[in-house]
Length: 329
Image (cartoon, rainbow, N blue to C red; front, side):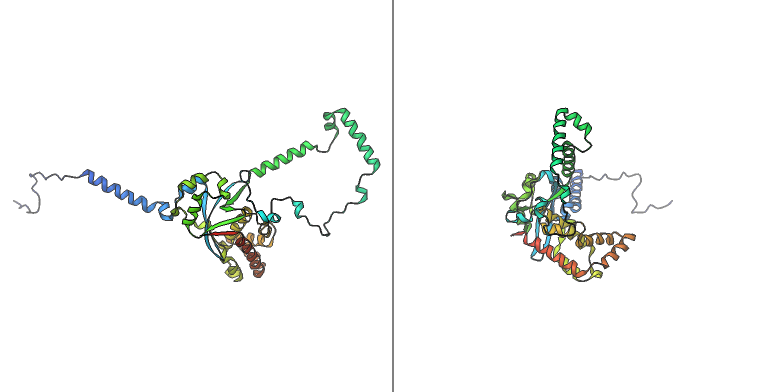
């Protein structure tokens, strides 16, 4: 007969039941879940509330300039829902003014010269008067049938269509006032200003009231996409083609375009306009950063762009933007 091990429980003897404190286990599990939520929460990881910015459609922005680094806010809205910032003594730089105000007066090869033959003579005026009287007698319907030229109503319809297209354009608006960008050296000072009710251009957008109620200093944590190092642009360009940082320069161009539009900085808008040397630089940078055959062509285009010319152009742009900044502590 085999001997039973003293450490082996007796098969005939029932094992004692263990008492489990279910309330204690559930509480421990809840604490572990809370800890995991805090560790994986995007707000905790970034230091800001992503839901706040998603709900208000306003984002915190960090801009580094030669004079320092500051925080501000930016939103994108339809141009028809915004009132452009007032620029006061910068009326001459108004990009929204009529084109005739900035027309070139010097004579050049493209100047249109109107010859005397183009002016109507007395006989032509009499014929026009006769046709006008005849059209008036026959009525509007007959005039429309006989005339091949577009009527004034046709032009009005075209203008209305153009206006509808303009309504669909989404444009940037910053935390600014009277044509000056408000930059804050700390998140706390930005939040204090937002809650103060002081006038600014962002106060007109939807979501501003909710932002005023909910914003906290910890929320002001701009993402990498909303952080711009404009203070490094000129130095990077001076280093030559081989040292150019594509992403740095592309993001700087995006920020400069947004700022120049929102602050109505005409010289910057002109310098970055389509077909300008700096616009060619931007297109070549985007091609070079895109990869593939386009990247090869983009790098070839970059070699043809003078580093000194590009750095001088960007130095002017950053100087114009810096002059339009209102630093707040």
